[in-house]
Image 1 (cartoon, rainbow, N blue to C red):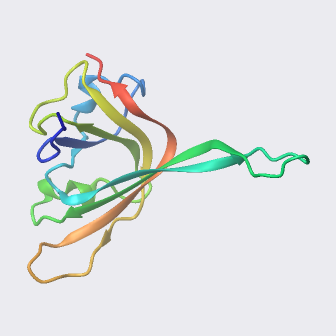
Image 2 (image 1 turned 90 degrees about the horizontal axis):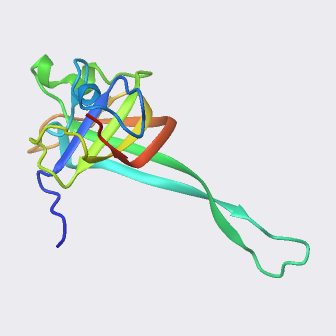
Image 3 (image 1 turned 90 degrees about the vertical axis):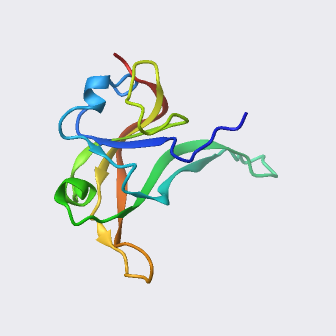
Length: 161
């Protein structure tokens, strides 16, 4: 059966993680985390993996050969601004140069707390400079934030107790 995405994505900015492959529930829920899923626009979670190519041509080659090269995560977030400081933490906490970890859990309702055994994607990142988007009719104020890869990432880690 296909996995439904509506309401089933949790996205959290976490300041500190001890083990990338097994972040703990305590780390994912600690004071200082930023729960982002209720601020990111419906189409505003953009994560892609760019991959280079390694060429394997020799002097005798008459064709070009390639293999998979290095990968790079590219993360951009479009989010709504809020008048209330407690709800505008993506703007006030995730500021230019702030290091941390971007954690995304899919396929489980966002209201379900992190729990041991759940699968997540985790990226070591440094926040870029948030920028406000141009105002438009019939929408709320929005901003864009790029997260720069500053260390390893795992597309499938497991939450530890």
